Structure formats: C-alpha cells, structure tokens
Image 1 (cartoon, one colour):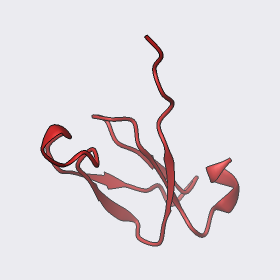
Image 2: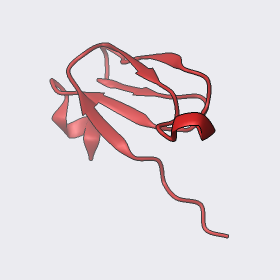
Image 3: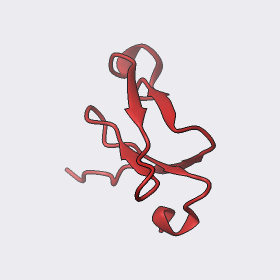
Length: 60
C-alpha cells in the first residue's frame, strides 16, 4: 500500500479550518494555526500543510 504525501495549500489567513476534505469520511473540523515565524501550519489529523501567501518559499 502506498501512502500519499499530504498536499500543501497556500492560504491568506493565519488560522485555517481543516476537516480532511473528504466530506463525511474526513475528520472532525479543527483549526490549524499558521506560524508567523515560518509561514506554515500542519493538521494533526490528516497532515495537510497550510502555507501563508506571504511565505511562498515554505510551499516548496
């Protein structure tokens, strides 16, 4: 079985809601705080990475 790498999404807010993106088969909605230091935040449930638009290099 192959495990897919989490996707990275560029956002314009410092706090982002994540629910796994799979409708009813996702996970409970949680708030992910994007760091003002490195511009990134990661969901503890699904591993989705959120990068603030002011930190474009963090998305690479």
